[in-house]
Amino acid sequence: MRLLRHRPTPPVPVEPGDVLAVAEGLRVRLGPRDVLQGIDVTVRAGEVLALVGPNGAGKSTLLGALAGDVPAVGGVVRVHGRPATEWSAAELALRRAVLPQSASLSFPFAVEDVVRMGRAPWAPWAAVAPDDDDLAVAEAMRQTEVAAFASRPFGALSGGERARVALARVLAQRAPLLLLDEPTAALDLRHQELVLRVCRERAREGDAVVVVLHDLGLAAAYAHRVAILRGGRVAADGAPEEVFDERLLSEVYDQPVEVFPHPRTGALLVNPERNL
Image (cartoon, rainbow, N blue to C red; front, side):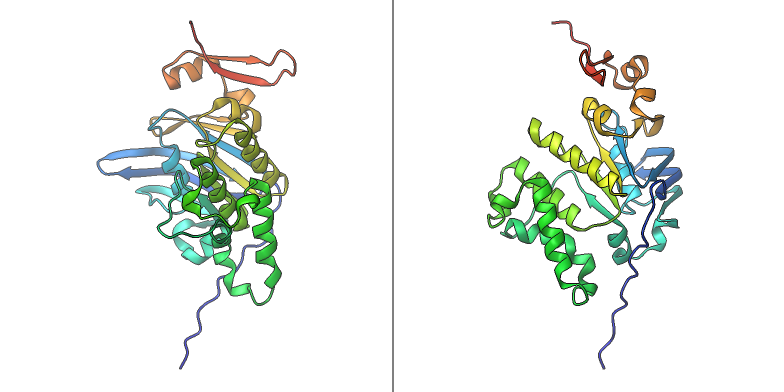
């Protein structure tokens, strides 16, 4: 007798402003240390939320907890209205896509094959909509500008190229909640802007994007909202123009920081204070 595998239910369509993930009183302990201590964060559709803060502040841990990958010792994380622990892995994969800090593969997969891995959660519906996979893969490769080397082995790429392919895999997953851990770290200036424009585009289309960033200038330019983490707590949460305060940032980073308007556009600029 052949056993029938349960087919997970896909997410319902979301509207701008819908809460797709929330952390309430979240506490996470790694080893003997409380890495997150009573975090409250809300992630809404149609919004880019940037997580910023110094090394060790808990940004990546918070991202992992919002993904349902890092267990909590206190509080709760809800994804699409339900505790993350109540979703199966297959159901979570339809609702959120996660980009880790680094991407590595042990086998010589071609770039297009790596991107196509993002379609794995939708395999149960492949026979119903056979063209969906091809369209999603092609669009993700176009957005990240990796189509030109689709047939090259992933291992033969530069660090920045690998980062863009890894992001393309996440975009191809077509989940309404994107969780991206330092997607710009290995990229040149042009491709940093490209990736953050893609984040804004996905938000305009109604998705929710949470992105860990070290570059406060990028966060100021592209995030609708910023959560500043310090010592496992949220020091501030709001629009960049509200929370990017010179005194607060200087305290959080233990480094003098300047916040000022661009002389031509008036856009917010954030730079370390330098006395050269």
